Image (cartoon, rainbow over all chains, first blue to last red; front, side, top):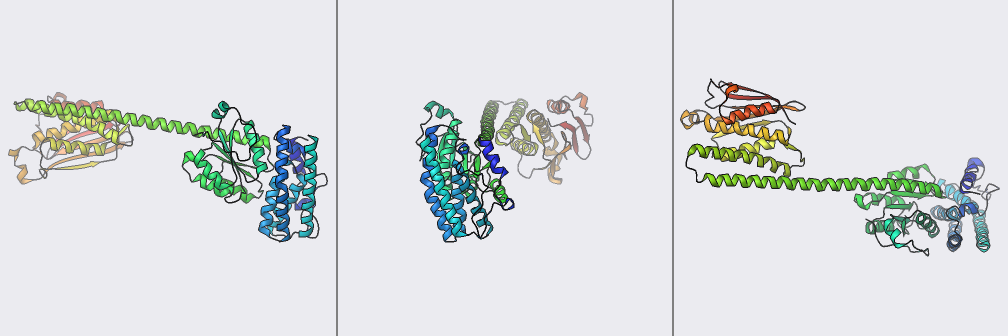
Length: 146
Length: 367
């Protein structure tokens, strides 16, 4: 998938309340079904140079764990400001490599926290953890394939 | 403006060749996220930028002041100092230290979009970064930068030319003052009062021209002479030159704010010089008794009559001019000059002699 398609895909399936993809207080965050864990076209849109892409993956793997933990902690402690900040940071990191599912989850957490709506902490926290684990595996597989 | 120092805290990338580095513009990436910086660095190095990096707004501000980057790519949300505060602080810097800022933001609310421009960012793009779009926006900033640099060069060039022009006027004035001093020295040896008078008149004419050049280099407007200041200085000089004591003659000046081009100012100065000299020489003779009975008056009015035209009314309450005086057949050099210079400035001259002697110089051209 090319960069343009990756973006148009996001645009066609906006994960907002009106579209049914949202943070539900009693449920996990809903993500559009075809959203990939790792969108390689996003990762490769800046450069296709393999050594560089490996470097980007390593940088991502270095950061994603502690960013994910910080967000989970903010969710557990019900600290709204920390939720906004950590979700924003993890969203930004996810956008770099094309971690689209994690990106959308963080986007929903950030916007829900900003509007003051309640988030089902335990389920969302575990969802963040699961998505982080999945993207780490996907990135490692991508590195190994290279 | 471009610095040789490359600060690249996380870089393992091979730098571009030194020669290319020197020629390329310097770009500062300010983002707390190392992966984003890595991607941005790669993307911008591909576009031939030299890249330096900051991890927060505070570092970015310091690096802008120390290394003067040409363009800044700035994350909106950063620790210590965020992109908004940093951008505001950059805006407050002197123009040369404030590079154009492209904000890169993950904030997707309209209030943040408005705030980006309020704090002075030139443009923004949203995350996830669309790399082709980023390149286009950066090119646009480069255009802004080039225009700004061209403007700065033009300003510097203009300042240089103004300084040179002032220097030229200063030197011309000094040379005219030397001529005036030489005439003065030579006149010391002259015994004949008529010849001495001619020397004094010549010296005054040279002085009035020196005065113009003095005003030109002291003025903010190098091409124009303020008539008000010029006539004031000119008349003061003449009263001093003819040894008029304080209180002997009252000088009334009512001059509108009129600016003259240099040539018009020289002509106008010569006319005023001749008229005042004429008054001081002939209008108030000691034997006339005026000194005891009434105040000796010289009045000069200059009014703007049109956007480019002005009139001068010069009068004194001296003994008056001979009734037989005919403008067409003037024999004295002074009044001949007044007549011909009035004509040269496109105006008309009327001489009226009754209680006052009045010279009306009507509709003179200021440029």
